[in-house]
Structure formats: structure tokens, C-alpha cells
Image (tube, rainbow, N blue to C red; front, side):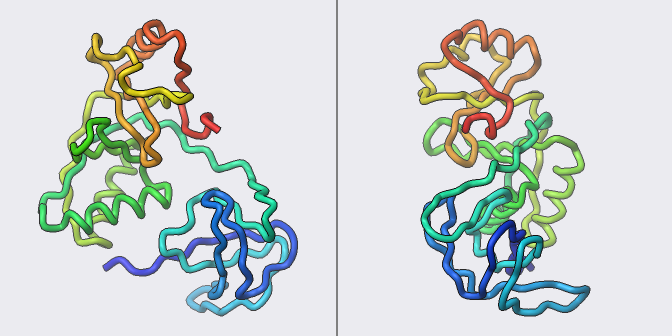
Length: 225
């Protein structure tokens, strides 16, 4: 069964004190760090203080993501995020047992937060059509193994014929993109609701660029910031 998660944080400057409140710059919310831990082999100990260079573990109920910045005060200082590699393999995924819908979606959310996979959804409201994006086939196998072992969900993974993803930069609506006439593309949204075009090959990418001269397509979500 899946248990609690620990997010690991490196102290970059200043002094960390147990119970301190910090600003989570991505969400803009204050977070109290009341149960910091350090690990040594099979042992874990509560940390009272930590200093630059130290790495501590924080209980994570789904608050943290890879690359998040925590800081004191309200300065809003943020380190550059950790970029995702652009996925090159895509597959539709569904739970074999419809009764495990809740565990299925919880598993996908948490594994995505860990950076194991990226997922995309249909731009059509009400259509529950999940697509996974990964760099290598092994990621799909690990995803399937972990869903079964940690969440008790068996899934069906169906590869689809796309080989690149391009994020749409700027405030565009789906109907403003000229993608309908050519079948080599699929318009979806990522987990942050940003528009993404899945493309079959470089020809489809060239076609999309030519038909949308006022749109900038980028290869990773990191380039949107």
C-alpha cells in the first residue's frame, strides 16, 4: 500500500529551525515545517536546526514539487525551476477496474509530482482521456509497476503515434489554433491546464508552425516562464 511521502530539501542559506514558517513561492502560501527529519541508513531523527549544505526530509501531503523554493519572509525569491525533458513516447492509460478510479487518479497525480511521468488531458470538457508522456519506455514500465504495487491499480497502456510535444506560449485559446486540417497533431492540456500540441513527426511540426505564424511553440513547459 502507498504510504506517506517525504520531500527532500537542501538548505542553501541561513539557518533552518524546526517549526519555522516559510513562504512556498510557487503557491504564495505560508507553510509550517514542524516535522523535519534526517536519515542515516535505517534511522530517522527529528532535526532541530539545519545549516547551508544540509539536506532534510519534510512530510509531503502533496504540497511540494521538484524544484520548489521555500524562503523566509515575503521576498518571493525563487530559484530557477528544474526543467522537464520533452517527452518522446506517448500512451493512453486507463484503469482496468473502474471501481478503482479514485486510486488511479491519486497515483497519477502523485507520480507526476515526483517527476516520474507527465500527463495530458483532452481539451474537450468532460472527456476523461489521460495520455502519459515519457522520455523512455522504462518510465512506462516503472509507472505501471508502481501503480500496481503502491496503489493496487492495474492499468492498460496503449501507445499512440506521437513523438513530440510542443507547449503553446502565450494566452491562446484552442479555437485560435489552426490544427484541424492535418491529422498529425493532437491538442491537449498538461496538468497545469496549459495548451500542448502532440505531433507525429517533424513534418507535422513544420506544418503547425507554418499554419500558425503568430504562435510560438516551445519544447518544454520550463520555456514558458
